[in-house]
Image (spheres, rainbow, N blue to C red):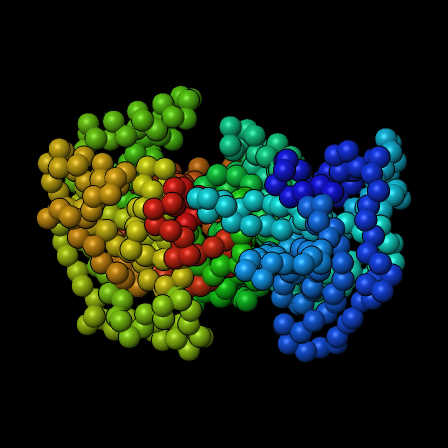
Length: 533
């Protein structure tokens, strides 16, 4: 039968097409006495659910199914062995059921035939981790011509997927920015993502965004409890808008007063970013000014990072790569420090999470309440750049991350303050992000692990209303469209936030759940790039 790994098999064709050369071949059926299926009810994760014989990779195999794994062992023919020769035992192969995302009956159909067809067996689709932590789907074919036999196994497999993994999504809200990924986002979704959702029996409701703030408006008005999660296909701006919309919707539903010093509640739904993986809780920052919530986000840069983004936005008529390079060169040419007052509340070891980054609700509340005024530290200085990161922020330019010492869910932020220095030394600092040298090993670079940060610029920045009537509601809660009156640009998750000289940034542990994996599970030498981690 069709062997796994012999040739590339797409998810949609693997379970409906005949094996190569299979039209003229007979499939070996197990004898009648081995068709028995033994079932158990309840029991532990290793209790036997059923056992039988299938052909896998053209070999008859003894297949065993439990609630946690599927394993099979090739059946060797009986033979007489020499007394002085050791007979090697057949190797048992297993697949964890948590890695299985779909099960289908495999049939051979004639051209144009939509239903029915000759039964070939069962195909199990597995998601496995390949090199460089990439996920790859794999099809495992269990071949057997008995309709009744395969129906029983199919039922057991589906019952496990539906019963033992209740958090798996059944209905997802999909938000696609058609202008991102070189205007290929729709193609990426419909050709690479949608077939997998269909295969896994996941229903979807799709919104193609038409303007800035569209995703925010959809999340505000939709029946959000009807969905099991939200998935966005787009760039950093789309991710930031959707995350902000989910969190703001949670505050509205909980009747939180966002124009006060409030305690935010967690988002009710997980957020998926294409590509994605398992469920992962993630810390989120709130950005406020004078007790007014500006935005939720994951990272921010003030000074060089903000100025570079502001310049790139000004020259959007240029091609993307050229615009970014031009903005960096111009920002370095006109490099100047910002006169700021920087205050921060250090994170105490007693309030840090355990090694896995998990904490209970009491620990979360303890961290939120640990804000004694006498623990705050303040410095007045000239800074070339100030970065506040709740996540590592991996990218192609910084394979170890802009903040490699922080994690997705450890309840703290990384504060990186770059004080005034020569242009040459600052460039050396920037270049080290792309290699293995310590980018923080300079006397003018200070790093801290913090819970809260307050930054006050000596430049007086005003507010200018640039809102259109169509997007007014979104703009009133999303500061990236507030126009600059002075020169206080902020880079928040790749979006421009302007118009305020005083910003209060606060960490909120595990405020949102993403479909993804913690960076701590990755090999430091193989991590290359990620839009979030």
